[in-house]
Image (tube, rainbow, N blue to C red; front, side, top):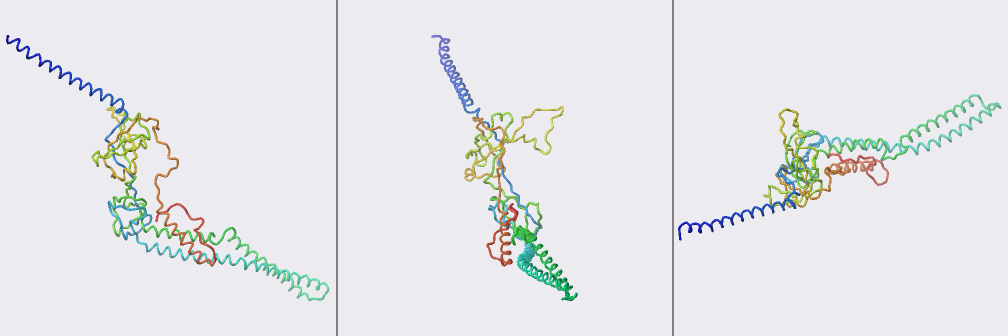
Length: 406
C-alpha cells in the first residue's frame, strides 16, 4: 500500500471528528439561544431590574418648643428610644413660677365668680324686700294725701310721705339694676364655664404646657442620630437637637431608566435584595408610587438642554417601593444602603400614577397631648377646691383638643 493512501485513510477520521465537534458546538449554541429566547419570552421580558436603588426613611427632628438651658441629656447616637421617652430636660425654674402664678390667679378668679353666683339669691331677696317697702311707702303717701285734703295732716308730714315713696322707688330700681347686672354676667353659663374662669384656666393651661415642654419627648420609636445637644447649652425653638430614625418604616427608592417604565404600575410585586446581606436575603416589596419627574428635575439647578451642544441622555425616574414590616424586623436595614430591585410587570391593571390618600394620616403621635390632659386635671382640681360647690369635676368643656408639644 502506498504512503499517500495511508495518509488519506488517517485524515478521514480526523475530519469526521472535527465535523461532529462543530455540530455539537452549534447545537449547544442553538439550544442556549432557544433556552434564553424561551426564558425571555415567557419570563424575562416581564421583569425590569436595576441596581441603582437605595434605602430611604424618615428622619424625625427633635426640636425644643421653648427657650431654655439643657440640664440633662438622656440619649446618644445609635441608641434606641421609645415614643414618649424623655430625651432632653431644660431648666424648669421659670416655668414652675409661671404655673404657681397662674394657679393663684385661677383660684382667685373662681372665688370672685362664685361670689357673683352667691349674690344673686341675696339680691332677689332684696328685690322682694324693696317691693314691700315700696308698697308700704305708697300706701303711706296715699293716706297722707287724703288726710292733707281734709286738713288732718300737716304739709311737712305729707312731704315726708312723698319723699319716702320716691326713695323706695329709687331703692327698688337700684337693686333691680344690680340684679340685672349680675344676671347678665352669669346668664347662660355656670361657674366652671364662666368666661373669667375659662380665661384664667387658659392661662394656667398655657403655663402648665410650658412647664411640660421643659421635658423634650421622643415623638416616635427609633434610633438616635445626628445628636448635637450638649449639657448647659442654650436652646431655642426651631433648632434641631437630634434626629430619630424609625427603622421599622423604611422604604426603597429605585431609579429605573425611562425606557423600561412603560409597563410599570402601582401595586406590582418587587423582588428586592440588599448588598448588606450579600443577596442572600430577598424582600417581597410592592411598588407604592412612581415619581412625577426624573431625579435631575428636582435638583437645585436642573439641566437646561436649550443649547447647541446637546447630547441625549437616558434619564432615570425614582420608583418608591414598600417593604413588609415582618421582613424588616427579621433583617433590619439602614438608611442609604445599596439595594437591587426587580419589578414583575406581568400585571398591568394598576394605575400608572398613585391615587390620592383620601385624608389618610401617614404618621402621627400623641405624646404632646399628655401635657394638655395633665393641665386640664390640674384646672379641675383648683376649681373644685375653690368653688365650695359639690359635683364631679370634669375637664374644661372648651379645652383645646389639638396636640401640643410638652
